[in-house]
Image (cartoon, rainbow, N blue to C red; front, side):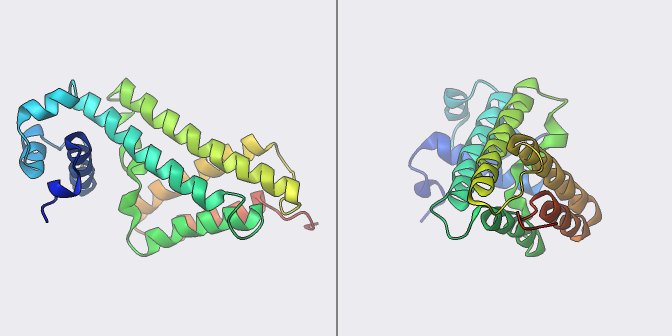
Length: 201
């Protein structure tokens, strides 16, 4: 089965191929001719769905965050096993484990944040909005943990969620620079401190 046959929607197919190619290099280095050749679609198809490469980048980020937001929502949902604190720690442990098993390429946001934020305002906005949505998911689970008694309410849930996301985003960037799990392991230690159980002194 060809790659394109897996995506009956041509727009989705172009975005899926583009994400794979960008993981291998960068958004800036990706040429339109390479994308079209790999996707096996004519130039007219690209411009039918996207006004420009920048518009394609915005759509790529929107697609990534829609999928990631759904996955995070499923992981942190009250219907999942464990209390709020356990679900949050499992989510961040999965983040660490993905890097340990060399699956960190799945985080398109980390890869593109530094590259495009000063280059494209629409893509910066797409990144910001996508990240804000993830922070809201974390905050909702923190509130659930505060309500079920598993998380000590040290700070407002929104502030804790924002601090945690910043902590892990920074750790992921340090991981890319150092090729070491130490920043992520340190982030997990600090995460446990920010999510103290209610019975902690």
